[in-house]
Length: 181
Length: 191
Image (cartoon, rainbow over all chains, first blue to last red; front, side):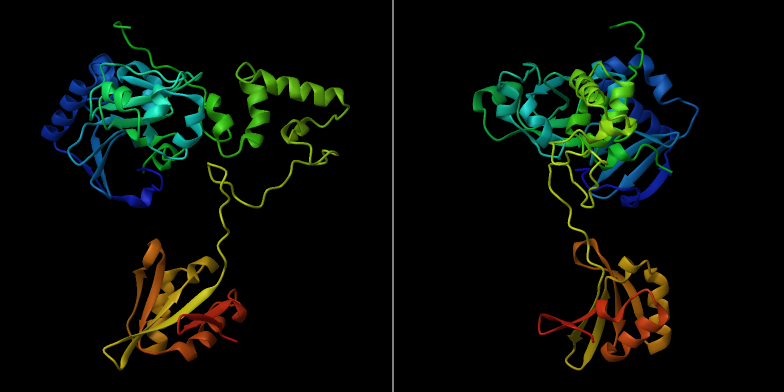
C-alpha cells in the first residue's frame, strides 16, 4: 500500500479538533491496550495532533512531524513500524518463515503457507480483519504490519492464498518518510 | 511486561535504514557490510570471518571489506560500481531515457492539442515551460498528469513543427536528437 508513497501523496494536513483528537486516542487505546501507559508520551495531550490525509482514503496520525499511526477509511489505527519496533508487545504477532522475508520486503501479501510452515508461527487467537505484526523466522523485529484476511484457524485449515494483507513493510514509502513536514 | 513499557532501542543500519538484522534482505547488502562489521558484528558473524580472511590475504585497504563478492573481481581493486539501480527483489530498474516526445492529438476534427512528454527529465520546470509555451504560441498550455503518473504539457493547437526549434532554443540542455514525434503510433526522430 505504501510501496510508492512520498510526501507528495499527502494531500492535506490538518490539526484536528480536540474532540477528534480524543476519538483517535480512544480508538488507539482500545486497539492497543498495551500502549495505554505510554500513550501520554506518544500523543501528548498538549501538543497538537495532526492528521495528514493522503490518497486512497488514508490517514496518517502525525505528532511532532513524526508519523505514528495510519488508518484506511474508518479502519483500525495501525502503528508505523518504527513505533512498533519500540513497543513490540502491543500487537498480535504472526511469524513467517525465512523464505518469505524477501517477498514481504518487496511488498507482497503474506500467503498462508509461509505462516504454517515450520518457520512460521501462528497465534491461534488472531481473528480475521485484525491488524497484526509480521515477524520473521530468526529475526527480532517486525518486518511488516498486516491486516488479516482470515482468522488464524482458517489460515491453518485452508493453507492457501493470501492470509494477511501487507499494509506497511520495511523500506516502503512510509518507512522512508521518517518525518513529515 | 505490564509495568512501564520501555521503548525498545532498535539498531538501524546507517546505510539502508533497515533494522540491522534485515540488511541482508535490503537493496544493497554489499554497501551495508562495512557498517555492519563496525556496528553490529554479532549479527552477522560470517562477515567478520570474511573480512578477516581478506585481511589475511594481504589486502590492506580497509574499504575492501565491502567488495567481498562472488570473486568476479579477483584483484579486488575496488568495489564493483553498479550503475543500475537495484530494486528490492533483485529486479533492475531501467534507467529512464532522456527524450522528449511530442504528440499531436486531434479533437473536434479540426482542432488539435500538442502534448509534450519528458521535458522534466532534462531538469526543466514544467510549470515554467508551459507558461513559456503558452506565451510563445499564444495559446493555452497546461501541465497535465498524464498516464502512469507522468506529467506532461498540453498545448492547444498544432504547434508540432515550430516546437522543436523553440525547445532547443529555450533549453540548450535538450539536444535536438532527443526529440521525437509520434506519427501514426510510431516514434519518429524530429531531425
